[in-house]
Length: 167
Image (cartoon, helix red, strand yellow):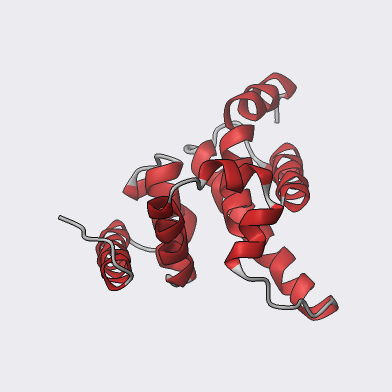
């Protein structure tokens, strides 16, 4: 891969790849490490004529996160960390989640399956199209649409059950 192209990709996508990884692992150091590894893989294996480099970077980042999580689960058993402890220990997340409504939405997102949560994060926070999401998750765009609708319905139900009225 051309060095200039890699620099451009890094400048353009490093923040959103980092935020995507952080939203999954909720650890700044791990997210930074996985983001760097994502771009290292781009340097080593991404061809310049790849049609959608952004989607490819997200797919690599996602796969690296799941590989990291599998390794982490095998090597060291973690104690259950409550959402409140996660928020308290995280400056970035603590600054983003300030209101009760946002905290409830965050909790609702955590109850979703991995695919549904990924779809909503990629769609709303990373502004990826359903086609790009389907490439990353290796499912059809129609499946992305269906899972997004189900995820939104589950979030709405969760929030209503916890006292927040949604019009």
